[in-house]
Length: 134
Image (cartoon, rainbow, N blue to C red; front, side, top):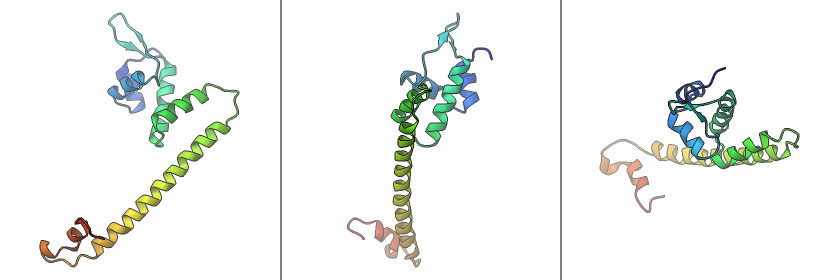
């Protein structure tokens, strides 16, 4: 595969060009070589790295954890227990968020079901949103 422009790299990974630039500034992708016309010129390794970043971001990992995972991925002979621990912590955070959203959904559904129609002055939903309501 030949060198890639930023547009082709972004397109191949479903990433916006500005996001690629952001990842460069954040140090997740090495600054690319430049062509004679001063265009960025990416290598196939950059494409694979960006795919890795995209996948971890799609799974909700924050940038500091993505950076840690990239560093760990380069240490091929190291025990993968650190990756396992990081992924498990992330899964626990997702489970907490799901529990919070489930409780939020239940509360909002209860508010909605209390609405019997009528005028805005009688609206149980607006009443529940008012300060001091519960």
